[in-house]
Length: 294
Image 1 (cartoon, rainbow, N blue to C red):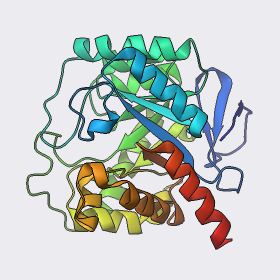
Image 2: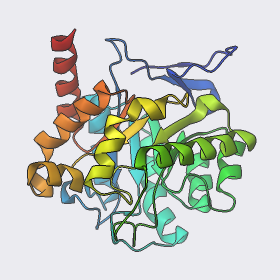
Image 3: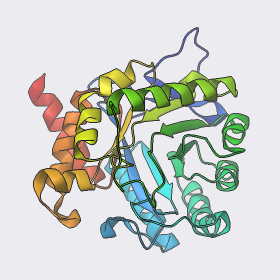
Image 4: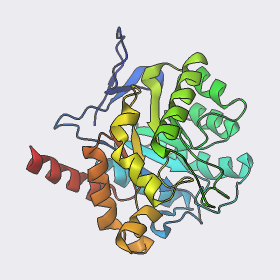
């Protein structure tokens, strides 16, 4: 992916994400772009995949720099685990984890940075420290969050979740999962625009594994184009999740191959951003897959 100076356009270009400070990120599906890869860096001790945990600030920064070299276009820093059954931490604890990493990374790289948070106080501080995107599992529903993102002219990822991380996998139910998720994301994108967030700063995430069973997740992956028809780029995050275990019978440490297969299917179905733990492997798989199917 490449970052370019932002240019005023007469209409929203779904293949270009506007960022703060006049920058933009290409999201096109041409051969030189393929998909935008978002590398996951968890500044936690309890994220569901042990291999992604980087509670030490220096290790987190080094991991992020390595991911950029491997082909990640976005680094997604998160300091709170939102795995099924997790307990929410307060914003002070989250800030104490994420700001040293964000400041350290920003001193060494101008790569696009996303911060995975649902707390307005954390979002505000992260944006002031140089973050470009707020990745919010609650889709800007907390008081003050939508105003914080709008004021900073940041990009935002609006995600669907049924319930909360602590309860979301306790018997989730939908009449029509794809349509209900699409309707929710449509409503949240409209509310974001009404609050002053321009359409070319919005990304949609159907929230694979967030209050969904296997059949719900599969319906969303098969229906990515239906969500993309809302007019925004779609992000898919399924790397090493329970869905991959359900499909392969593998434990979390052994889900790389399954994650790659599902990521390629998501890209083929219209995903423009893939959120992954394994950047180099995903980049290689996507390049090879693209060459073969052309």
